[in-house]
Image (tube, rainbow, N blue to C red):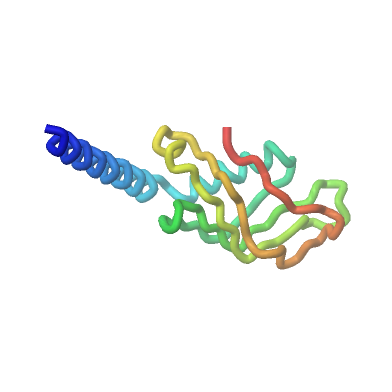
Length: 132
């Protein structure tokens, strides 16, 4: 009896895993990556007061779901000495898959190489809260 229960439990766990992965792939495939990136930019604006603009946007699935933004520009404050605070060639914003399945965008880690053009050299780049 115990081995039958273990087999059923293993099958149920596999079915659940496949269903979660399929739902995630479905959500990321049918959601507009540009609208997800616009939501990220709005969150950056709300938390920093600075405009975030970007070029191409795509979704990466592995090793974890992420938005990949190219030609990313973070505008400086109006009182700043340069129009751009920083410019990045590419930035990856890891997506919280469970939050996305419930209809919320939550980016856990926003990472990229050093800024292409750090206009304000005294600014310390760190993490930017991106979700509610």
